[in-house]
Image (cartoon, rainbow, N blue to C red; front, side, top):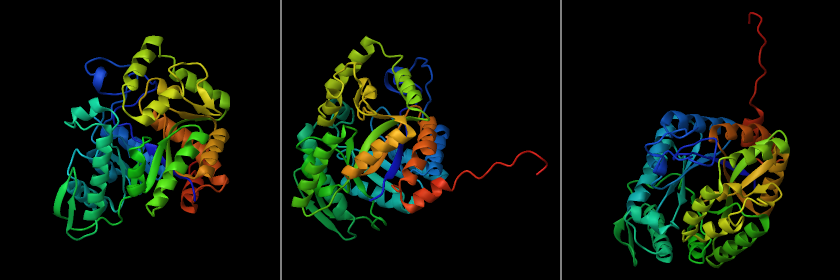
Length: 385
């Protein structure tokens, strides 16, 4: 099992701080310092950088605060050659048969570069913006049925399904996707675990300390074994990697410079209303306090003071960040879905600093390692040539 690396597309906006990062929501109508809007030109820069640096795919989020993931990534596919797109979407907001058809078409248009990230949704207020009024556990019940229909439709012959949320008669797509997209799935609640065990190819967890990640892996693995399935594992983290540990921690501290107590309190109150068990676990790592944000060597919870979802970052020298990745990998984590602020610059810090470290340790596939170490032809000095 090798390390497989993915980056992130900030389709809600990007910037140099953790405050006012999004181009939408409260920022509409007022000038925001350092904001980078998620236009196609900027996102193309990030996608091309990720491809050049050796990342396998980029995760594109879903929500009312960002651009649509399907449309954005199929546009970016025209500007890249190998890069895959981990498209996040919410079951229940479209027909499962339509989703299966969209995925199959996407695979043909991009020559097999689609991965799917299923986001059931842990925030009822966000779900209601889409017209969805199911409660937390019923959303997971619906996701279970949704993925059953999607996989059934992909078989290439008429498929019937009769459930509490879906009634499908003769569902099919004209041509099944080739290859069938891998399904990434996350969720820390008791309602999420069985769904992951039945449907996920890759179970994705947020960046908790290794002991907590191991417990979650053991839990999902045991549930999958009861279903007669094998699930692989991934982790979602931010990174701040520099030539020295001191430089990395200085950068991490600068990210918090714009955060006052009121900003943190408001963010924590909003995040605390989430129904997501995973979000609750992220909040528990720091308790809303700036004190002792390094919750494990080189694992920093500062991002989670104001950001929902993934709230931890790997911070340190390139070798130290590689050490933590190697530690998670030893637990069974194969996929590392990473990000940093701003996403363009941090992709280069990681790609030019940490990826060579991982390659030297034999943790990358031969293809990824060769693309990584094969870059960088010597510059020719000026002299008439």
